[in-house]
Length: 296
Image (tube, rainbow, N blue to C red; front, side):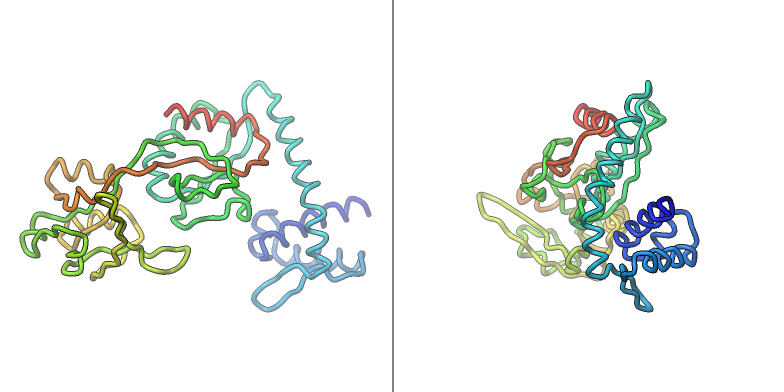
C-alpha cells in the first residue's frame, strides 16, 4: 500500500507539473494508459479527485493543487539530498538544465560546453534554445542566459560575456539598388528582415541610440525569420537589411559579403549573464559550470 501510494504520488506530481498525460508519461517512461490508470487508482484509494480532465487537457483540482504545493518542497529536498550524495563521488556527476537564446547558445554557451562535457563525462547537460523570456522557475531550469538588462532583480546574475553591439547589415548589391540609410528613420524606405518575438507575438523593434537619444524603430519588409543564420543569409543574398549581433557577421563584413550601415547608432551594451534563483542550492556540477563560463 505504502509503495503503491508513493509511486503513484510521484507520478501525480509529474502530471500536475506538466499538465499533460503525454509529456508526463514520456518523462516517467510508462504508457499514457498505464499512467491514467494509476491516477484513477490513486484517486480511488484517497477518495478524492486530484485531477480535472478534459478531452484536450489535464490540470490539478483544488485538492490536487493543495497536495502538489505541499509535496513539492519535500520532493525537492529529497532530490537535492540525492544530488549531494552523488557529488561525494570521486568524479563530479549530476544533471543541469539550461535555457538560452539562439545567439547566446552559439556565441557563449556552446564554445564552453564542448570542452566542459569532455572534461566531466558524468555531468549531463540539457539546453533548451528559446528566444523568449523563459520563466526558469516554472520551467524547472537550473539557470538561464540573458542579456544583463533582461534579468529579473530577484535572480542572481553572473556575467559570462563581454559587452556586445548590434549591427545593421545588407549586401553591396542591395545598398546600390536601394541606397544607404543615414538615420534609423530612413529605414521606412527599405526592405528589412524582421524577427517575431515568441513571448509577445509582436515583431521586434530595432533599437538605436546616439548622443543620448534612444529610438525603437518598427521596420517593414518581405521576410520574417526567427533563425539568426537565415536572417544573415537573406541579407547576404540581397533580400533586405538585417539587424543582428555584430560578432555574428564579422566574417561576412571582413569578406565584403555584407556592408554595415548606421554604425554610429549602435553603441555597446551589457552582454550575457547566467542567472538563477537566489534560493538555489549549488551542486558541484552547477558550480563547475559557473566556473567554466566565468573563465571562458
